[in-house]
Every structure is written in C-alpha cells, then in structure tokens.
Length: 423
Image (cartoon, rainbow, N blue to C red; front, side, top):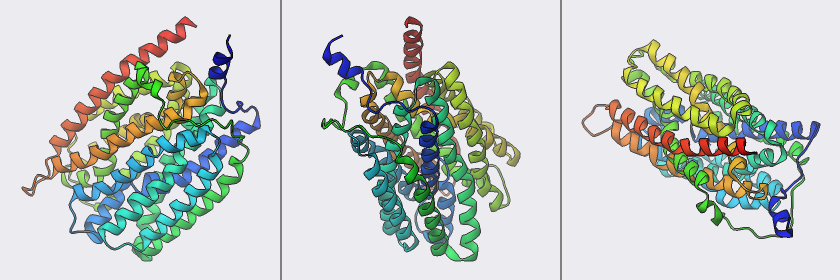
C-alpha cells in the first residue's frame, strides 16, 4: 500500500472505546436536546413550528399569510443545514469546541432577541437568521463527532438514540410554551426557555471535551469535489432534497389541517397533534437505529422514505378527528428515520472518515435547500386567494415529491448492499 493510500484510508480521530464513546453519546444527546428548543421548536424545523405558526397567525403577526410565516422556519432551516458546508470542514480540521461554544452563545442570544420581537422582520432576523446560524454551528459538528468516533456496528444505533431528543424536545417545549405564554406572556415564555437552553448547553459542553480533535494543518475545501463523481452519494443528495421538501409539511400544518379539514372543534386538541406526532417520532428514532444496525442505514432510510410515500397518499382520505390523530402518530413514527439516519449514511458512502464532516455538510445543505422551498410552495398551494384551503394540492405535491425521493434512494441502497456482499 502506498503512502498516499495510507493517508486516504486513515480516519481522523481514533475511534473511542468503552466509557468514552458513551460520554460522546451523552454529550450529543444533551446538545441535541438543547438544539431541539431551537431547531425543532423555535424555528419549527421538521417538527414543531406549527405551534409558532398558529401563535403568529392568531396573535403576534395576524396580518401575515401562512406562506409568509412559513419563510421564517424555512430560512432558518436552510441556514442551519447549509452552514454544514463551512462547519463540516472546520470540524474535519479540529475546530469542534470553538464551534460548539460560539454556536451555543449565538443560539441563546437569538432566542433572547426573539422575546423582544414584535414585527415580522424582527422575528425573521432573530428566529430565522440568528438562531439558524447558531444551531448551524452545532448541528453538523456534533453529529460528525459521534459518526467518526464509533465503528459501523454502533454508529447507527447511537445516532438514533442521540437524535431521539429532537422528538422529546418537540413534545415538551411546545407544551411549556403554550402553558407559559398564557400565564406570563410571550416575552417571558421565550426567555424562560432560553434559560433552559443555556443550562442544557452548559451541561453538554464539558462532556464533549473528551473528544480529541484531529489537527493536521491541512486546509480542506468546503466542498468535496470528488463527491460529484460518486453516483451513490449524488443520488442520496438528490433524494434528500425531495424528501426534505415534504418531511416538514405535516408538522407545520397539522394544527391548521385539524381545525379546517378534520373538523376538530377545539383548538387545543389540534395543537397537541404536533406533540402527538413528536411523541411517536421518539420511538421511531429509537427503533430505526436498531433496524439500521441490522440491515444498514441506507437501506433503512430508503425503506422509511418508501413507507412515508404510501402514508402521504393515505393522507388524502383523512377527514375526521380520529383519523388525523392516527395519521399523525403513523407519520411521526415512520418518517423519523428520514432525519435520524443521515449521520450514519454518510460514512457508508465516503471513502475516508477524514471527509465525513465535509460530506455531511454537503448532505445537510441539500436537505436545507429542500426545506427552504418546500413549505412556502405548499403554503401557496393551500391558500390561493379565494378564501378556501385547498389541502389536496399540498397533499399531491407532498406525495409526488416523496415518490421521486424514493426512486433516488433505490440505487444507493442496492449499491451499499452489493458492496457489503463483495467484502
């Protein structure tokens, strides 16, 4: 083996063993829990912006349309995920700790500024941009730290466990916000949760110092150019864009759908649809990690996307309170693997662990592009200016987009399985 080959095959930091990798998992779990407040709750990325969407429409920003309000969460999601193009290579070069500290402070600052916001542009700047940047500095590096520190046998399982906190945050914090906003008002409700975020960050940061970063002085590109010649990875990127356009839509519009299309008479019941779906996603994320360990993360993600496609077509038939509750549970459980497993997928289609951070950033940027355009398109399809909500248009858009995503994931799943049998 040549010296060049040895350099390519050598991973960055040495894989951890024993109690050390459980410390990394515990830190990532706490870090993700803190991110849930912002990533899954404040900006509504994937899980819980429906709570804020309803509050903004009814009280804070009633003059804005559903599509306009959706831009707050989608812009934040795009910034968070597209930041991986920068934070991924920075992680590869050993800057995990500075990224975590700076990102944590920026997130808390953004939440505090959100508590002072009364205008649309202020909410967009604080909740959409500032919080997006802060959480973007944390998201890809924290997942990459877990990915490169574990072997294939444990990676998918532990990433699934760590990502379960996003579902827990999606259950707990929307409920906390709803209870506090009625008793102490919007400003102090946001500030109270900001203090919870700060506490979680302080708890997680010391444990993450057990991770030993690799600093070899190499300056890496923000984008791995060789990835564009890697057809399995490119196929995953394309599939991720289409699935991301859809995954977030039910979580965003479930409360509104429950009251207008499923005939739920009580707004509080419709509000809890988000928490119900998030509760189911916790079990889905836990299960997908174990399934991915057994059959492979790429195959598991492809199976989840195909199942989500079927479920989206079933959405057309949901028109009763009981039906929308059951559908919410099914969607939260099945679709959770779509966002839980990318961290375990990337190492399977990356030639060296030294590029895991870079390629992970590229993948999440593709997801960010999908989320940036998906929700506003669906909002425009629902509201056409005639005073009615045309849900079937958004449902058709979601179903067809997920079908395309399924097609893109077939080749990577077959490629990884064939490669495994050849070893």
